[in-house]
Image (cartoon, rainbow, N blue to C red; front, side, top):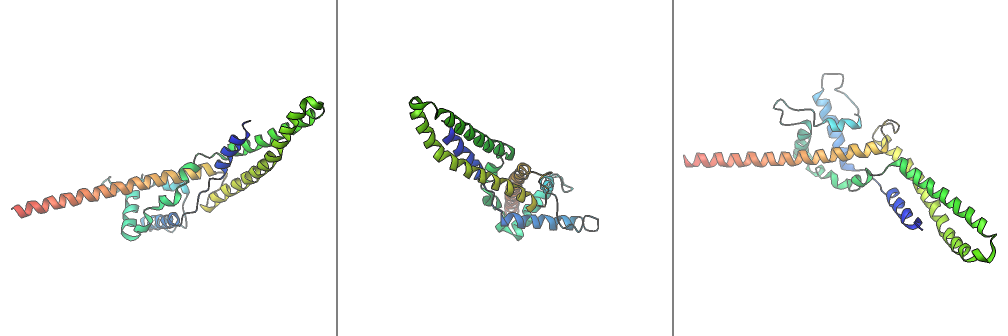
Length: 224
């Protein structure tokens, strides 16, 4: 009775895709370049890459004034040099939904469908020996199975595809899926995206404040 709604819900979860963002890739290249410049002359000054969780540490590194973080500086550099990259979160519209997907749960749910289908087949087989009393029941179950068997097969294939691509996504970012599973990759990217947007907004507010002060100072000079 619940098959349709449960299958639809599972398919929606399995169907979530995180599109590779060209803008995110270019931002990561910029972060690597900034890191190498800042670490020039040290053992870390010629890195060819960085761990994904390093994205969340950009707000920890602060300037001497303690007001600007490396994330603020990144946004400032992009604003000046590559402003077209500032809206990269728009390329990751499914990111938040993807963070709610748990691979282990998806696998277990798909397996539960297969096992449930097996029980239905067994029940049908047993009921077929009951004669006329179960004739209507058997007819309805056969109709259900003609649809459900194909649906479960489709879901199983889709689940296998999603798990495979989830591991491939970790490899794409240079991570080991065993150490940095899909859920962690998605959570890290979502947090980075939000921190980036916040830092950019703070930069814009700071710029507006500075412009306002400059205008007030200019007015003061004119009055004198």
